[in-house]
Image (cartoon, rainbow, N blue to C red):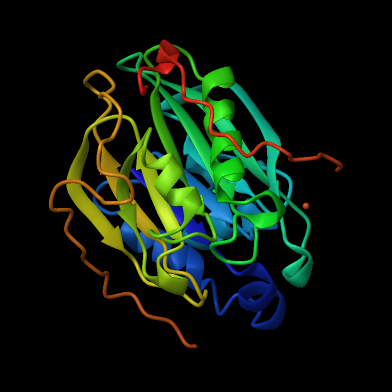
Length: 272
């Protein structure tokens, strides 16, 4: 079970003081009865505070990355095999906050031995532009990251606030190689979850919890083998159900990106 959540830290935490731990409370409520295995946060400056607000800090290992990216995984269930982060895009001058990265970790399930390659990403602005090098380049950089760092047989989960909706070049290019599991509705649907393995129809829009983005949750089946490449770009497969919890609240180093060609993900991770 995975979560992606843009916390809008500057507003929710810096201006509003966290609203009494509203984001953490949302996570805690959504993690019952089935807890989250892995969570990816964007615009996150302190994952330990979020987990503390959720009452979950003793149960999770959290990692703070660059450019406001953080992830956390259930310590009792998963062992980290490798992790890293690299820049994959850069904002356009008109709405510039810096370079945008992808934070990743390879996790092995302690009981089954299955491995998940988990990537947390916050895409470049302006929305749907793909940043200074465009959507195809940003998608290509993400796919190359998968090809370089994932291992044959890994179950891949790529999620985050892509600052790109279903009609963007970024999402359309990614969906040629990965299955689009679920998408939110904030800012036209810029929050997305992709995978190369089967996913259940259990997916939820959890609401914002004080953020301007809704948290998204999905259950992904890693028991089987990776599936062949997606054939319906940008369109979620199956009949994924949208449900909403009842929880409510008051309310980036120097890299040049020049590629404009998407390199197909290699067969080493069985998604091309």
